[in-house]
Image: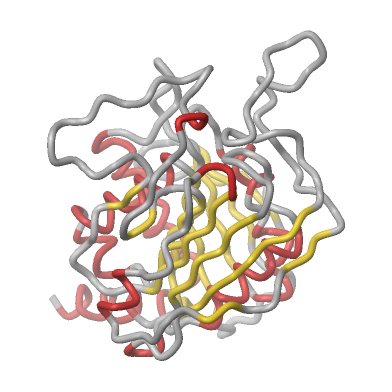
Length: 304
């Protein structure tokens, strides 16, 4: 599978680009923009959510960038990062041709998920083009509560202005897309049984799918913790990679065929990399969802 380090032309910043082998000249693909969390980088995100391992099987094109701001920790903030992300999308579309991108998904872990949420709320470029959002512990549309152990002993609970959503809760965007929320069991108090996003599209009550059983571990963890003699993490923040089981619920019958699902990785926290079978199950959901927004947006731009 071809893997390159590309340079986004406007900013001069590098990003990873993974494409399938033997990509035909008119072959349709699903495009994923894969965003890391706060304090992380693109290389870590490729190991945390290794979508590139399935690029051939599911004909995926995956761009994985790194945020520019490094102090006090690397995070997606400000117009420079947003412009960089828009530039990546334009550059990849220029290489592929917009007509070949059957669907475009934002994938974000932690602060990368919150950034995806913000782009879908505030940035018309992404509102008009994104067909789906996979939030990897990056905010759920609807009620969610994080346990106190998520914030201690190594990080403080954020002080939010009155009326702000709870930590872990996304703000509802005013645009249309499929939505998948995936989380570790220990990083939330409980998964709600209903989804406001599913209700928006008239979907039925959630239906539990077969458990996803992984016998192999993920590829990465928060390497600041767990070394002998070093600081120890919590189950909520995440321990060492290990095999596990994930539970999946889908909300059937959503208008327009949109995919809406919740996935919980049992006995896992915030930072253990996703195991291979749960990664593939999430990608199967992504490629089963409807697309077409990016083609419509590019055609509209061309006419204008």
